[in-house]
Image 1 (spheres, rainbow over the protein chains, first blue to last red):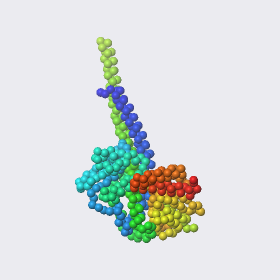
Image 2: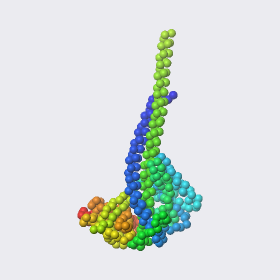
Image 3: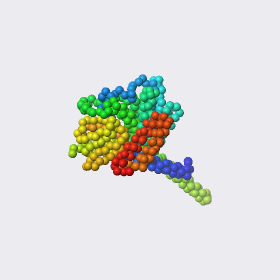
Image 4: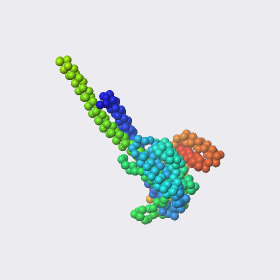
Length: 288
Length: 139
């Protein structure tokens, strides 16, 4: 039987842990609100951008160097994770997805290089020797220019034909409880095909400069938007995952405390019974 | 006077959504003005000063790279950033301009193409900010 004092110490420790996890849960939920707001305000931009892209790529302007499809020998993978841990299997899922992709590409005889965004991705692939570029400590406060830097980096290599394809691995924020790791092809940019459902009448536009030139200007921006989108999704997903993880941890702490309390009470009762037996035994002995 | 609906959208959210009389914007192939019921139109935008008139009052804002689309009597700007002239921190913009100039001379001296484009873009933004602030009567 473990000593009374030991159990008491344990209860205290666990209840302190539960205080921390509870606080982390609340911090995460506050941060999530911010991240979700950011997602909301980004959405109109992304939607309108996609619409314009559709309009343009329907025309004859799809002959762009950033759209060139080549035989794929080298692949750039951009892996976006959070900077901090303690958010359940959120980062692990992304990393596993990336590992699977690397394996697939290598089996097909392609060389894979990595761009890691977020500390967790960097840590996970540090030993693989594949990291070409890593961005650390930016998931807390990233801006458009961070996304631009990443997109420009990979686009430059693509144009120099040093890489033939760029893929983006991140987690989509589906809901508070589900974030799904996904993979998207960033380069070459595939022309957006308009859905047949929409009335086939596309209004005539005056283009200034020519559609091809507009496309040339728009494509790099399109890459920025996609990278930024991935980062926004991950930052919201991270907080949501942390909220759930910390909520679970707090509940688990409660369960452990309950069990420990029972153990403590049992031990205390046993000690009292033991003492009583001693007293009664001593009294009996004196009587004799 | 007939009005046109103006929307300025950035990744950080919608900055303007208003009915205005006229919009003047810095297109890549030159400044252009748009009045109500303009024909469908699509143009790229370079970093510069966007102005629009409403109730006899002209407002100026700094916009950076993006594009503009006119359709259905609505002009939509999709730009990477947009700030009203009167919101601009002039001192900060001046400091940014100096920093960008320094970087540019450095990049030119060492012949670094990447840094050069970055510094040029930063310089353009700083200059546009100052211009927008000046038009709005600041500084």
